[in-house]
Length: 156
Image (cartoon, helix red, strand yellow):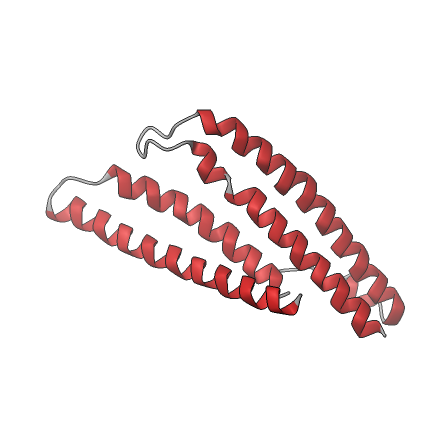
């Protein structure tokens, strides 16, 4: 499982870097077209906006997998020992349920619904843009299961 996680981490990190570089290049192109030629590119603007959404979701998934995500530890820090382990388990189970219901199922439904609607500028189905949601939901479930396994192994 750890080998799969390392490969997945590398892939996610690489995708995030490539998306970020693409956004920088597209934005530079957009600014150049706007100020040098007085003809802004609507394609680069729209594509940058969609890539930004993908970057946020993919990088949040990556950070979640590293267990560096933002969490409110006020209540969690009050517990120690077995109680803290149980709380961690409950949090991971809630995360799995949320990811399964909202991100995977809900994301798949909204992706499917939007496959018939096309973006007016890029001429692609808007479902492609939404498809990152269920993919990241599956990845978050994988990371949560891995966290549970790590917590159980560390308990012993």
